Image (cartoon, rainbow over all chains, first blue to last red; front, side, top):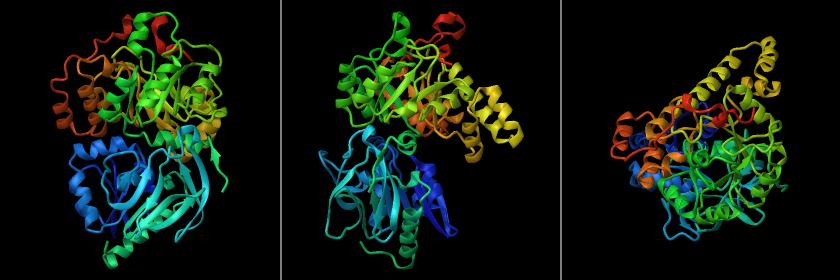
Length: 197
Length: 295
């Protein structure tokens, strides 16, 4: 049985818990640092990245989360979660957790009225993946060890670097669980042979 | 790759991302920055906070667009703004200004005493207040993508928000336990759109996020509303009417996140200075009860 956590400081937690469901997966709602020790993988949900970062600092999650990623344990970030993972944030002096070699730009598609949904083909995941973009970031560039999983209109919207997966949309808001199950598979594989960074 | 804007998923999803968070009323860029720094998930741009609207009397309208723009440009978190109930043009104007959510709000003087906005027509999502499940589902039927309790705004008195949240939760539970042949009668009794009740019964919950609002004055109030099943809280007059808004705002945010950690809430409730004064509900004249605006 794998144990995958969803960081529950703020944001859409319940939706991720549902989307991760699989016979061999136990999902943990993570509110305290100690819970990280029991996890095989972790999801950073959508929400407000500035708010989440404040709460990460406040509750001493900052170093433990960096450590979790440094051990090569799988992490999946959607929207605000991807912003938390990026090594660089356009127009911002400091990144947050800096676990994945990519530059993101916040609210890059515009404000809420420009938010949209679309179907995307995703490398390794499938065709016509339902993607809901809400005040979404864009992945402006990625490092050489990063695989682009999906693009929308010429912009990168999903990527993977070994055990780390990030996307600028919200697969958790749809009934299409293929991307989550792809991450579950990443966790499953990591338990067989720990992925080197 | 066809792109669809303003769908239910996009509009409701935006509110889903705010869950577990605090939305704070602000009247200028400086307050907006303090709110963002304190950990607010969004700010509500207003000309006056509800307690000042109460004190000033007269007609309360949408904020001056200058204030909305000033707040919008000061922060990176979402910006909401209030339009009068039924005021189509105020709502369209706020949509044009690029606000991220519109509150069709009883805090302002209603522009229409009969018809609420047909919110499905807009690309921008709406939040609306409700006192019970009938009102909540009527707003959803009109296209609201988020709900909040009405409470009694600007009083610093939590009792009405508690009443509304308890009632809505109890009525949802009742719907969940009903058989098919009972549901239509319940729809009639509540004045609720039948299809929204069906939706609730199928999914086991309200189809949109439901926040608490109206009278939250302390961190303990915020935590109480989370205990009662709110998805998050709106704090209006409470923060910037307190002695130390930055500290007060942080305390409310933390109490909302960790609403079941009582030791923590006790700690962060210390030395916050005086909370807003507050009004006993029974002393309000019927005409001053904002919750009775709209239907």
